[in-house]
Image 1 (spheres, rainbow, N blue to C red):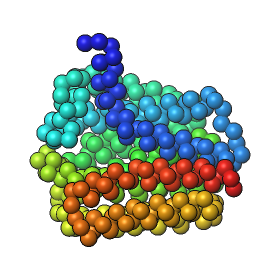
Image 2 (image 1 turned 90 degrees about the vertical axis):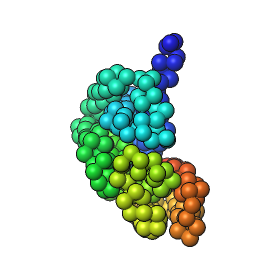
Image 3 (image 1 turned 60 degrees about the vertical axis):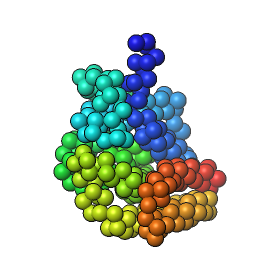
Image 4 (image 1 turned 135 degrees about the horizontal axis):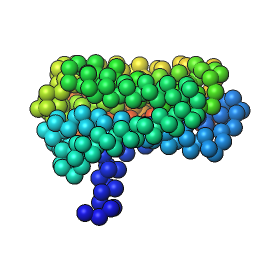
Length: 290
């Protein structure tokens, strides 16, 4: 086996599609914070921030993959991942994840104490609370484990300043409220996989109709929240973007409510990431031209 093959497997182990978006929320929150507060971010701080969030998110994904290696081997969607497919041993994955976690904490400490505390909390919530304690025991796993998904945005904001902290909390809240629609629409699409593995996700325990109603409710909450907290601090660019993006995501959610199908749940799932990205880009643009 060549070095490129090994690197590819370890890269895949970190679930890059997940941490790409989390790093983007941290970057967007930091840039927005900088533009609002008129505090410049040094190149060194940018490196510490982006490398820290990337390694922390990758560590969490690697270590949850280690925790979930038995159920990943059962589910069709995940059985070809590096650990269950045998391309990376569980012992090596554990060591790799712990090294990444240590790197993330070092970078966080070099930024400031608030970032360090948030990084510790995010790792604990994702690896222990979500993956180790709740994923196999409670359908609240996504809700209580969702705090870790909101942490990178908060880290990005407090890297620059703790002034107007309500803005950072609102950005983190956007991610937190986005997670149920994102994850549950996927879980609805692959619910038989979760049922086979014995994972108590919402669509497994509550059934299709109730799950779709709950997804619709969480989507409405997410869109309303995306509009309300920002009237004080942001202007027309953000408002128009949030309004258009929210209308689209609500239409997809209600389409699923009226015409339940695996196809529609998959379309809703695929639309959620561009929706969140659009909101954070709008935050940057609105701050730039305010």
